[in-house]
Length: 309
Ligand SMILES: [Mn+2]
Image 1 (tube, protein in one colour):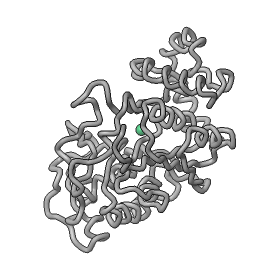
Image 2 (cartoon, helix red, strand yellow):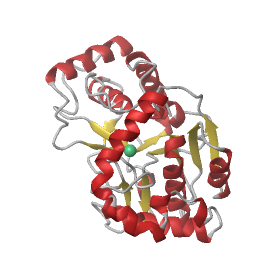
Image 3 (cartoon, helix red, strand yellow):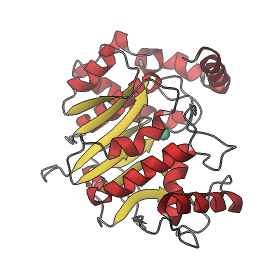
Image 4 (tube, protein in one colour):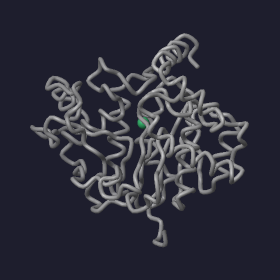
């Protein structure tokens, strides 16, 4: 990319997502994306921070150790002073860029937010929950639109691009997240809450009902809809590829391993430092264990619930 760099990429993870974050950062550098990167890191080991910094242009912002989910720090990080560029891009740390995606890191229109809408709408978004969103937006802003701008749907936010003119909007998103998400919420998925996808649902509520919110782009391009060789690959399903491969993530094998190879080649990590699922030589075992992934994930969650780690 020869154009001036206009965007800072922001991501975050607790220690369970440190390897994912390294993959994300490495995928950018491997593909020639030289953008500054801000990483919100919660409880990371020193060597993981050193590896991230070794890729260049990476600022680490320590997140206070807490039980509240890291995803809720998204609006704070996107609006923080380490972001000095005209645009900011949020990228989830369970993801990788495929190809040079620089073009997708700047929006077509500074008045719009680049974020994907759910189609079809998530089943958990009932009319009752939309009414709660509207009521809460009205309490925050002192006003709210009578009808949702997004109809019966909302947004899915692993990848966001926003112009810095929307910093006051990021601040409203941050404050509302603090108001409506309990401080002891650990994981982003809260199916019994009106804010069932925590930070994402709060963003959705504002985009639906805040009269001063940016308009959602009708032209989301980072998913490969415009160019199948340049896209944002979001791993989504648990467990994540660096924890254990599963039936959904197998398709990302040829996205993940070239990035791992690049990190080893550049001396960012040694092969022996890699978690087993990221070792090519163990692929046969990783592949064979796929049917066990849903059970292993349940066991991991239970362990976290009991031991908090
Ligand atoms: Mn994600």
